[in-house]
Image 1: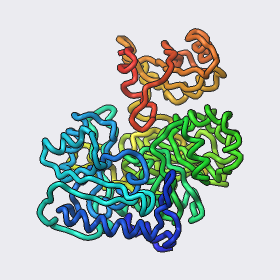
Image 2 (image 1 turned 45 degrees about the vertical axis):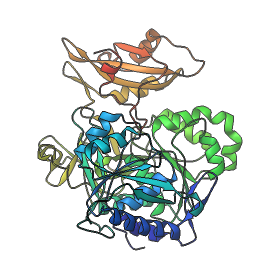
Image 3 (image 1 turned 180 degrees about the vertical axis):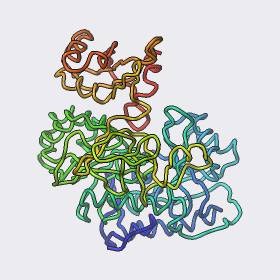
Length: 506
């Protein structure tokens, strides 16, 4: 099979009449119709004055139009999907930071992004769904047009397809440009790791302003001619209804989603039995081993844990399907080369712990307008991930923590993930996140936030005793907060950095 180097080439993998995009209550969009939609969109954007290299912010709700608009807009210009939940000031920051030329919103949108676009003189383009032509079909219209763009037609492999910001938990968010070549390589890497075929049906529950949803949820299945059933975002109460309608062979999600799904599974055993999943994929943060085994028991399907980040156009490593799986690892390199490096830039031997580094066709060539960050992030052509870990003799990668998240308690280093897993072994605990709190003498101390299982009871004292019996004294959380819910980031990830401030412990 020829390797695609652009998003529009990815669509050539699908047979003309095969379904590409599916959604509730509407006919599927075939691959032939999707290819026509891309051609139409490129022409419409060029007529409006938008061409290759121009930045187009996309603020659309999750659903089939968001999936198709991303592919079609990125084939003509540079797509910048933004979280629809942002407030005015956030839109203002992100849209000005990337020099946005146009904003795409749905017709009648009341998003604050529209106000920002008006204030900044950014072209406003409205998207009108055309469900009669299939799930995700649309047409674009603009109030005004700009001058003819410098470069028109379909994007090529080295054009920037997608621009995203890093989460910026400890500093100003950095701009990550990803070329068509980066993104197409990553989609193909994921499809290869999962053995995807044209017969596979994905159920997408991931937000489509996020790298995980865009690349693993949408582009990977398209690269093999498969179909994607697009939901309106993740809702634990609606997941099994969507599963019944979509009859998927797989889905991908973040750990908090899997936990919520498992929590509702006992009410939906018939649906699970009706639609046998080939596998379940988990990525974007560490999946507690307890949740992994519960998922596998519930769905009677293997769980594939993958390791990804924005700068790698998502996937870096994955557990092989049907191969040896080593619980606690993120599997083997699945796309880029992966190695371990020390602080001085020396590559380390098998079994040694250091910083995980990557290089390959899916890795960004560098942050935009940020020489300082690039100087810190790249060493001898390797990108430093900021994750600490090791690789064993079989090539399996273990992440021991984010370098920025490692708790330094008076010189003693503690990996928060180790304490999470101990707490999660307690029968009453549903979720646990260990994090650093400021300490006047030690610099940092250990704390944890815990959500208990429904109907279960445990006190802070009991949980501390439980941990005391299992780890060295310096690793035991001084404080364990029992919460109804742990604050999450926009994509459903539990975030350790800044949690002490959020929970009033700093």
